[in-house]
Length: 156
Image (tube, rainbow, N blue to C red; front, top):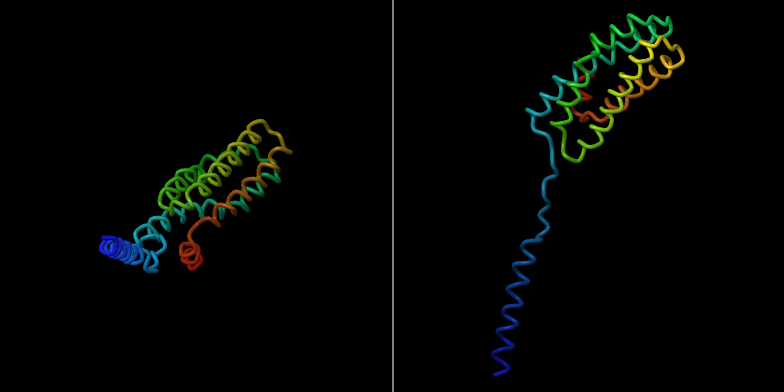
């Protein structure tokens, strides 16, 4: 009686091992990637982000001249949409990148708000420090964009 029970146990164990090994068969899962539609949407939003970033030299001149009014006009005009653009981009990124992108976007928005406040208060020292934080924020956020988007936008 022990022999048939042993055979049944061995057969069951062999079946479990076969199914277990086939489930872990080494077929590697495809790493998550962005769809072509997501890349195209990110590129459209990134164009606006990069247009705002390209205005940094103009902003630097205004900061150096301590031109309070035009500094605020640039922030509230051409650079105003950058927060919305980053929010839209962040939603389309891979889940693993979203937290870092959101952190960097919030830092840039805070830096823009601090720069605006320094211009409003006409505080030259805070204005210069604020500009450095804004320029750094644009640079850091641009690095979170997917590599394909960065390469495609360089060609434009």
